[in-house]
Length: 486
Ligand code: NAD
Image 1 (cartoon, rainbow, N blue to C red):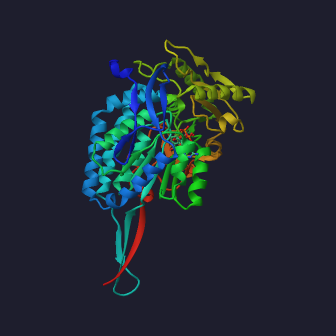
Image 2: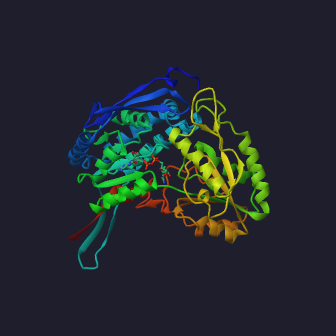
Image 3: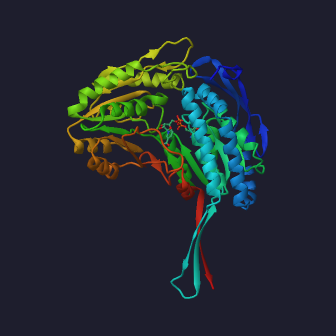
């Protein structure tokens, strides 16, 4: 893509409350992690009372929106999806500037957001139920789905278009009204999405955007008695806090949190394919994916060959400005994340993990948060092999055989995604059944998922019903059982 004035513009991002664009109580800014001299957006920051106004607007709009026809909801979502797809290059550019994903990755994420709205446009027309005979004579029973009410949607920064899309689209499709809070690091992406949604002429209050801090805006949403359901994606620590507050007031809650995803490489694997999976899964998007393959569990007989090939591939990767052609990995999201990643390099070395490659801060033509991808040989007890880092740092764990590899794969408090590279149908099938996760991959990177099927994990990674696909109805609707004497 040619660099245009759009590559440098500073956006003014306002919030959207009760059908009106509003300034905030204060103003914040987001910067380009590829070039910190560039302000991407100046955005409106809400306080508690502005957030409460957005929640009240959503509560007032609910009785009307829940009664709209499925056709109306489908049309609205379809219109939003079409506009996102038509503007995917522009949205991708904004995403790449604000979050630091490479431009092709960012455009692909924008397209995915569009497809998600299109998918849920169809789902709005397919809200079904069940009807059956009662165990009592002449009594009919049916089970129907109804919207939950006002849903609070709290999103992280790492997929600033796709994650909001996979929360907002099902919420609206099933007749709920929305209060959406994006991460402070990517307000312009949230605002750009809101602008498109606002153009779909929803009734005032049906969709609201509030921006600002987690502690003030996020917490107000979580604690409000008017918010019936909360969908949160972010860190484990924040997720725990959200869960406690939400369950104390018995709100419905869904959490998607961290991961420490294993990619098992067996001796019979196509090694080039396995290295591709590792590079893609562990390092692309600067490792800032909850599905990143941060533990590479390799069978002993191919361990050394795998490490040599992976090291070779890492050395050939281009790290740089997210808008530059040919760049494989952009910057990490901000200075704090870079400092944390560098701290992890020290932790890993100090605990005795063997450093194989990378992990240095890099200088480029622009001042950005660039870092070379890092690889360690670790032991299962090392922190670098146990805790989520959320950066371009992965470790290799050596396994004696398949059973040992499976044991290592499951030896984690997390359970989001697990992958295996093998040419053995027997091991592939066994792994799919016995990996303690919500998603499995065979001969594919752990990161990189479809938009029309469930997303989520087990153990410490997730809580509550799955997101995405038609299973999203579990969270965004409430079941009602009706009895009727014929
Ligand atoms: P974070 O927990 O810091 O923030 C997530 C959101 O919560 C932000 O909008 C933030 O403002 C808000 N928040 C913060 N404190 C809050 C509070 N007290 N009450 C309510 N809201 C509050 O996470 P992050 O740094 O934005 O994202 C990175 C994390 O997200 C990583 O741990 C990653 O694994 C996880 N993540 C998980 C998935 C998944 O689906 N499993 C997907 C993407 C990211």
